[in-house]
Image (cartoon, rainbow, N blue to C red; front, side):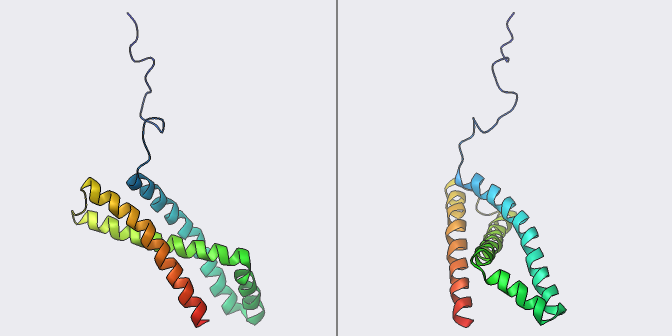
Length: 130
């Protein structure tokens, strides 16, 4: 008697699943949540530097004003906005709306578009003001 389950995987894995927008946004939502944890340390460092005096604040401002610092801050801003927009999507699901496949896929795609657009608008406004 042959073991018919010998050649089958024990559980589903990435070779079986096709990456779809809702799955990708779920993964990105978790990643942005983790990124926000570490990005908030940057905000805390900035506040500590502000409380420590002008030389510490100038040094942190110089780091954040560098090209690498600006890229990190841009990524932090996008993670914040993307996580917030994804949170609205989850809130809508908590209320029992948006479970239809086509609508859910459209929301996943819209999450990316909205988060990128809002991040760019926020940075444009910030550069105009400062």
